[in-house]
Image (cartoon, rainbow over all chains, first blue to last red):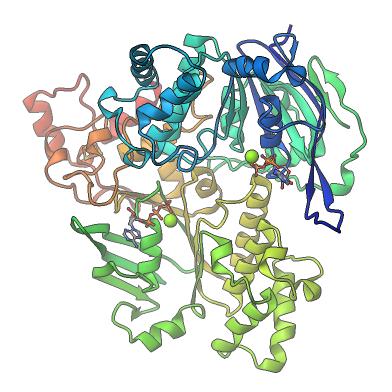
Length: 292
Length: 345
Ligand SMILES: Nc1ncnc2c1ncn2[C@@H]1O[C@H](COP(=O)(O)OP(=O)(O)OP(=O)(O)O)[C@@H](O)[C@H]1O
Ligand SMILES: Nc1ncnc2c1ncn2[C@@H]1O[C@H](COP(=O)(O)OP(=O)(O)OP(=O)(O)O)[C@@H](O)[C@H]1O
Ligand code: SF4
Ligand SMILES: [Mg+2]
Ligand SMILES: [Mg+2]
């Protein structure tokens, strides 16, 4: 059984509406289905505005989906009561893209990491501090810096604080929304390694949202490609990268800059007319689906 | 075309003056693309601003020379440098939204650039604007010219900036992270467009980026910047196939795709910030190959191949020899030439 099972998820936003005017609706997520197995990394890619972040937030009910279902360990997340949802949320956490704005600048690093424990009423003060110190060590932060404020840390260190906070409640599933995009190239690799180590050590399952396709290819077991709110192709990473089937996937993969001055690549330009928006996903090879 | 030598730009911080650009030298030849690569805060944008004499206090150019087509830019009068800016050297900024004025239509903004430099009369301007927008492949250009910046997508805004940059037919374009905020598909389109414009107008291009993939695809030669200094420069093939500075090697190795699945080969430590650049070779706290002289005196530039140079003591035979005779504290003393096989470690 899959750990996370998303089926026919829809999120509609109304924009520009006023008292007298009807706004326009945007189908940010438009009938999206996928399943993530325990212990795997599932990559979600696609152009800006294609609905990746909205999908991730719907899974954790940080925003309420318009329609569809999400199950976690077989339990229907969208039907949970407030109290049950609070419990479920311990098991599902999110790490945000921007290490600069996602941490409260007026809180000390210790308080930021401790806060989820306080909110969930876990442990006495001393036990909590013990846990915070343990989390600091786990993500490679120096416990001498517990009382520092976010601005006293580098970008990579701030992302480690965000990660320590997300891990505080011992989750088994993390939504990683562009977790290294804002970091320097040489520091990105450190945080990626940390994510890989933590996954092994703590048996974590990741939904990994990123625009760096080389990175997604490197760390994901399976990938889904989103285009205008829909998943247009999904499959095992190696198969999808080796033989993309959907015209958008082909255009996207052919656009990745290759760090080799002698690479001969041919860029495929997407002709939007070649995309049949109504085509359902069909299985092309084992586990490899494309909407063509 | 452009020859920068010994350029030093200092910021007067509360803690004292600090060189964000420190003794930087490079040249951009006619018709070529020089890629300037480095991480955040390494001094790429300040280098571009210094060439254009656009550094604002607390920053100031403290020394060096910038020769452009035989003229020294750093000592030109304010009036003469203004005539060169935009007309002969164009700058495409990192952030398209801040580079465009939100209250004027894009057509008016391009026309303004043409009029200021006397490249068109008021009468001709409108049709030239449409031509330029067509050249950067904006569909329905005549109608789009009446749009305000917020009515365009990120990719279209970036095209408008390119149209503005080439409006006065400059001979050098400095593009500071022109594609960083864009989707990969639009980024690829922009890079194609820049290459096309470069060929059509015989431009030289100084392309600033932190993306080694973009560099590999676009640059003829590469300069790698770290903590205000150029630590290695050379032809693009030499930099990617035979990097001679440990930082360049580290960057290339840390990229996903350079290793098989599993952990990446990261560079330890963090990027230093201005005001706290380490003494000696600024990379030494993170360098796996550091030895005796590295933390005290900055290495000078040493030739390591054809038009290829690096600032690293590993390329200084006398330093390496004295290290070997002292007995190194490292398991395997390597010279720069040998240590490129480190990739297999
Ligand atoms: N709160 C909101 N109100 C209205 N529209 C929204 C809201 N949040 C997202 N959208 C719209 O939904 C669509 C999907 O946005 P989303 O942030 O999920 O995209 P994304 O794939 O994460 O893009 P990016 O790669 O830029 O982060 C976009 O058109 C966006 O403008
Ligand atoms: N106005 C300023 N006041 C003080 N310091 C500044 C100012 N402008 C730039 N600096 C400093 O100069 C150094 C070089 O900055 P620069 O903008 O050139 O970096 P960069 O290589 O372009 O980085 P990025 O990739 O982030 O654009 C940085 O440490 C920066 O903090
Ligand atoms: S000079 Fe020394 S510290 Fe600097 S890169 Fe070379 S070996 Fe490393
Ligand atoms: Mg997003
Ligand atoms: Mg910059």
